[in-house]
Amino acid sequence: MTAMAFEAAAAGWNGPVLPEWRNTARPEQLPPDGQWLTWAFIAGRGAGKTRSAAEWVNEKAQSSPGVRIALVGRTPADVRDVMIEGESGILAVARENTPVYQSTKRRLTWPNGSTAYAYSAEVPSQLRGPQHHYAWCDEPAAWTDARKGDVLDTAWNNLMLGLRLGSDPRCVATTTPKPVALIRTILGRKSTAVTRGSTYDNLANLAPSFRDEVLTAYEGTRIGRQELLGELLEDVEGALWTVAMIDGDRVGAPPDMSRIVVAVDPSGGDGPHSDEQGIVVAGLGVDGDVYILADRSCKLSPHGWASRAVAAFCEFAADRIIAEVNYGGAMVASTIGQVDSAVPVKVITASRGKVQRAEPVSAAYEKHRIHHVGALAKLEDQMTTWTPQDGTSPDRLDALVWAVTELTGNFGADAWLAWAKRKAGEAQGTQAQETPGTPGITAAGEPQPAQSGEPAGRPAVTDGPEPGTWLVRSSDGQRDYTVTADGRCDCQAGTHGKRCRHVAEAHATADPALLLKLARDAAFRAIR
Image 1 (cartoon, one colour):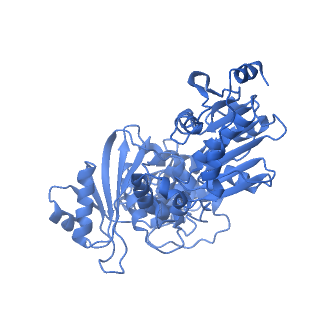
Image 2 (cartoon, rainbow, N blue to C red):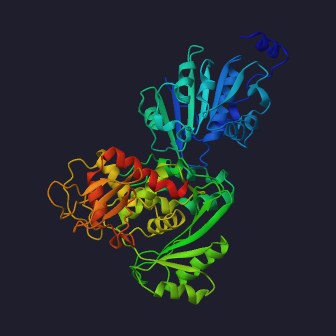
């Protein structure tokens, strides 16, 4: 025990006051019996995870004078506002032997000399060197480096290397699970004891407003199994989005918007068996990123969904409504006009398949340029479960893709970005077949070279005047057309989103690695 610990003990420590919690806690909220290094309390939102860990920390601090405890959260604010000062945090549950919190030193000190130190997972180096008897890790699934797992110099790795004081060092990890490497690592180790809980277990102790908000957002959805029931959802093979991809860039509130649109994907009918109408609100922030603001999708009559779209337009002070007209034609704009003729409507027609439209948007998520504002559970369900092979029409997802495409200048390199990615290694061995509706593109996403009609020995494709461009000789040999990495050509056949044979021929001759870089640069130039 340190000199400070002895001094604190001599000042009249009252001893631990703990039975109250052990008499009222649910079984899963108490530490498991037996030998374990990590206790993983995996549960849904509001299940009582924070209270459980705060009580455990207090018990260890009070029953073992002079111990050192690590408190690790996603950010410094999370440690302070949730783990220490929160309504279920350490200070709130300490009762008689309340520790002194020195925020500038990131330290809690109990009357018996035990101490706890606050660390942010955003700065793993903070945990290099310090040693501890015990540790509490809050929401490790959301830590910045959780996707890396337990590798050198991550927050978890540094913490565990320093968890070596005393004869029985232990750690509690409280989290809503997410399919990231760190959670899989923790749950897969023999030294981990797991208890599980759900939001429903703790409903009696939750505020009515919290119950209404959380249950309304997540009940009946796949994401709800994670957020409410605490299930670890595995990624769907072939899906263009993952839960971790969306969660990693989620925000609580958006910045100021420079432009907002409401995108509508109407269904092919209004009967009881028709699809939902996708209605998604998105904005382009002043920081250049895209923010998905709301999902107002529904299953209503034409007048009903049009009224809902107009209401979203007014609520968010949007600039216009974007509506796909593949179903219903001019009826879509007319129906919206009947609700409010003053609302500007831009009608769009799908000239490419869903995959070609969705892939560049998915790539923008990978670039961390698109953020969901709050919980959009049903939309995210579609995003993380839809695959190009399932043959369905994802209404909410389609509306999102239209909104993002409108805000970002249509992602000029959409199909070619997809092809370049595959060409770099993802589609090796795929048999090429012509894809309907996408001229010159095979099922593997690869351009199909056209016959140029050039005389033997005369190259049909040469380097263009600018980096990342090519000159393609016309079939009659009379002129050259300029083709760019993002699939643009200055011939008339290359307009309206179609790919002419000059583009296919130029890209078919390009080095895959070079084209991958050029296509990515072109695809994201519009949103920088």
